[in-house]
Length: 321
Ligand code: NCD
Image (cartoon, rainbow, N blue to C red):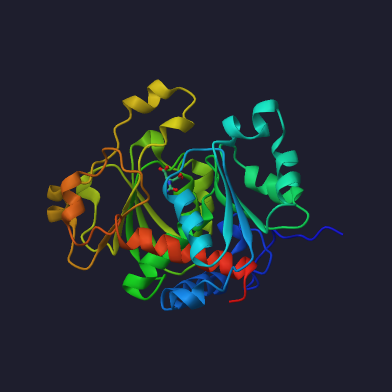
């Protein structure tokens, strides 16, 4: 009989597919964070035992730099090996018309887990529904979710503040289409007393359905359009780009101006204890001068935490940790 690998995790990750933040309770989120912290402190020789003999397929139907490479390096550092497909629409049997389902049926005979990124919402779930023997990890399904990104972001926040509740955050960007934000909001909604200022032009604000969902889940959401509405007491600022590839009309995306993070804005509205995060890639929504600010951790700590978080997830799902 086929196992249900995509249900609630409840602290038991063994052979589970990781598809959405909806599968996580706070216990499971903390388990990922604790394992990431544990792996961080391991010797190279000890960490390289955790995935020994395991093979992970990376099946990336959409462009990726960080997620692809960090899953690859995570598998390798844990002693596992990878089968790597970047752009399978051009390099796999998808070119010949093979369905995603059939591709999954094939690859599950070659490896112990599949990490998939795909332009369609629900593609990772479809892959998980198809796979009989192995778990699927969602590395981004269209405008759907990006759970491993949210977990690494939460790990980053936790490392700085020692908590995931009672936070004040400013998030700027594309609340219509950014899957990383969808997963992050779902994650932060699991903790009490989190207040998020969502800074975006009206066209990119949350749909009213999504807004209501997050409110019902307990997030305090304040939608803002002007810099003057940013409070001075944020724990973190989190910037994202416009997801132009998800617009039906790409011209429309070009006309939308999203807020720019500048050193001037930081001087006016920042504080000494805050951190500045970005999901990356950055286009032009954060001035390069901001990169030099010690509070900006998107090119160092956030990326490093991404590797430890993905190592933790792989080890929990496949290994012995
Ligand atoms: C994000 C994505 O692909 O959703 N990138 C990433 O994984 N770091 C964000 C983006 O592309 O803007």
